[in-house]
Length: 519
Image 1 (tube, helix red, strand yellow):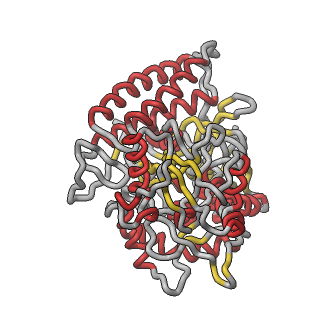
Image 2 (tube, one colour):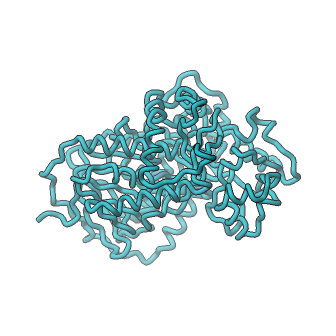
Image 3 (cartoon, helix red, strand yellow):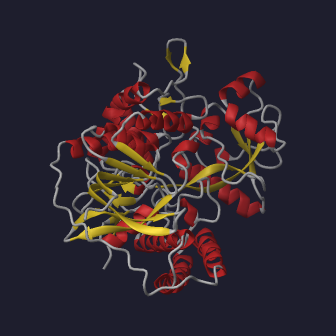
C-alpha cells in the first residue's frame, strides 16, 4: 500500500531557499514543505540587511566577484561566484515578481554598502528584508495547489536506498510519531548550525539538522571550520539573539569602547567596513584585553527621523529595552551567525548522493570561501534554489519508489530523565563557545574534541534506548555538527578568514577545502 506521505519532491526547511525552491518547481509535481517550527520561523525571516546585486550602472559584475573572492580569502570557487553574481539581477526580479517591494530612492533602488563591498550594491526593504521575502514567498506557495505545508515537523534521518535518497523519516511534534515521507527528490533547506554556540544571533531552529543528517547518510561535508561570528549582536539580558544589522556600519555607525573611544583604526584601514571576521576579532580582542562585557555601536550623530525611518525594527526593539539609538550608543557583542561550510553541492545544488539536493545555509556551494561577504547569503539562497528547481524540472521522476520504510520503536521506552538532554545541550554549546570560538588554539580544539566525543557517545546511547523526542533529535544533530566543526578546525593548519588559530597564525599559499566524510 502506498505511503500516505508520498510526494515527487520533499523540501526540508521553509526559509528563503526552501520556499523559493517550491515556487520555482513546476506545478506538475507534488511537493511537501516541512518546517520544524512555524513556517516563517527561521534565520531567513530575521535577516535585516539586504541582498547584494549589481544594480547600479557604475557597478559591475567583476567588482562584485572580486570583492566576494577577497572577502572569502581566495578559497571561494570563482566559477560558482560568477554564476551567483551574474544571476543576481534576475534574482531581484524574481523576488519583485513574488511581491517584494525593495526600498527606493526616487525611481532607483536605495542601495547601501556593507562590509567587504567596494560599491553600493545591497538592496533592502528598510531593515526587514528577510521578513518581506519570507511573507511574500509564502503567499506565492499558498497559491499553489500542488504544495502541501507541514508545520511542527522535524526530519530525523534521510531514507537512503542503494546510494540514493528516497525522502526522510519525519517527527510530528504534535502527535510525537515518526513517519516516512517518501519522495523522488529531496531538498535540504534546513539552515545553518550557529546554535552550536552559546551566543548566537540565530533563532532556536539553527541546530545543524540538515548537515548532521547528510553526514550520517554519506554526504561530503566541506569547510565547517568557517563559522562566521557577527560582530554586533545586541547585548542585553532580555534581547535573546537580536541582531544589530551590519547596515548601521554601512551607514556610518562607529564602534566605541565603553569610554567612548574608537578602536577599529588599530585593526584595519577600512575601519567599521572591514569584513566581519576582522571586526569580530577586533571586538573580541578589546573585550578580552580590557575585561569589557561589551562594546558600543553609535549612530546617534545622525538625524533622529532618518534613523527611525531607516531602521524601524532596530529602533523599536531597542526602545522596548530602554535604549534610544537616536541619542545613545547600542551595547553589542559578537555572536555565532552563519555557517559558511556545509553539504557539498554542484551548481545545480546536487549532493554526492543521488536525488539529494541542498540549498541555502546548509549547503556548501563554494561561493563564500573562508568568510561570507555581507548580503551574499540571501542571494545564494535565491540563485541556487532556482538552479536546483530548474534541474529537477528537467528530470524524469521514478514511479517505482519503495513503500516499505517503517520506523521501529519496539525496543525503546520513554525516558524519565529529561534533565540529561538539557544538561548535555548546555554543555556542548559552552564547550564550543569557550574552545572553538573566534580565536582558537590546537590545545583548546583537542580538549573540545575529547569532551564532545564523550558527549556524542552518551547521546548515541541515549538515542538507542529511549523513545525519540523533538529535543533528543535536535541534541543529536547539534552534537554531530559540533563534532564536525571541531574536526574540520583541527585539520586546517593555517589561519584563514573565519578560522584563526594562534598556533598557525599565517595563511598558507595553497587554497584547500576541508572535506569531512563519514568513515
